[in-house]
Image 1 (cartoon, rainbow, N blue to C red):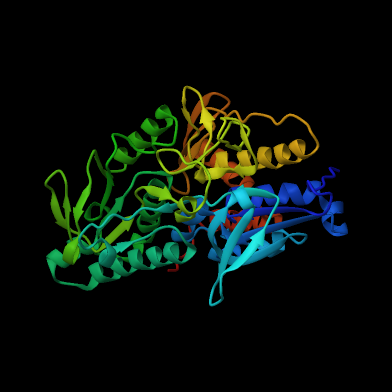
Image 2: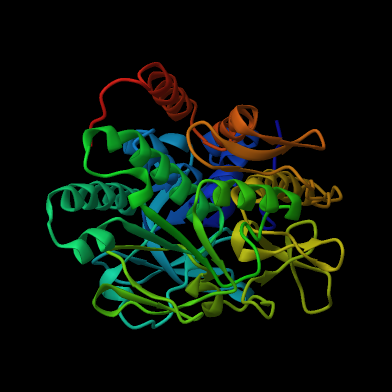
Length: 431
């Protein structure tokens, strides 16, 4: 069991800003390692997050498809961190030179919070450009509520298409467009396409060839954060399932439900899902910490923030999507829950090591250890240097996803959802 003390010999105050994967994982390890100090008052861990819960975003696609209960992908922070102080508030600014953070609780006045060690784990935010009609007609895919709303929207369109006599309205109802081919967009499209395929038996006047699934991606490939070989395999499988994939294409307008793409294509669609791009969390610009050109916190490979002299900035750490962590060759570590969790574990260990005078370890991302869901019976994955597809890849993907859930109770519930879903896969479908 580690023991640490503050520089002044009193209680060490550790402030974690952000309750996502990286924030919660680092807090849980520190809670385990400093259990005696936390209970005796020699250490204090405070985690600040606007919402007092973690959403397991890799599982949102399965929530949208009805494979996982929405309640099971939400982890209450206070339950996961019984020995820590969890504050449901927004962090408005940070002055690390003075070791002060300012919190803005909902409906309250701004308050100061002093600290000794700072861990930034605020992740990234969805980026929505000012495309005409996007705000009015586009659905997001960041929260459990949005995943549930997307499922409802898709099923509503099937009901509409099965009853209307308006041919144009029917085509628009059966056209589903996803903008952004990252993990979220690809998984959501694949899961929902399979859901629709399974419920079509309840709509005898709708055939599978009546459906149109469109994936719009401004880049030159899908799953940009994945290994190129893995991404290419996923691309081939989606095209084999008649998904219309538009690479190097952007959405120009969505006014009145008429979608206009940069390649000149125009068509009506009643379901538009925006999952394209992220931007740095606004808080990062309200700190005195160094940022990279893309707005992330400039870090060393030990997860310490870079100081003015190029060495570590005392008392400042960052992990997850908000941290620019060096990775060979000459770039930065990719975003994603896998790296966020691994970085958070190492960060907590390094913080404890530096408080006792030990040398912190460097973070070395494991190449090729990635996977993506392509429906309830399919996925692509790398395991042991091999590329997997189909059911074996699906098992690997689900095992990895389950390990990322920071709650044993939630893991059991999600596993039960999967087992029951497989058991009753041929049973009646309910919305």
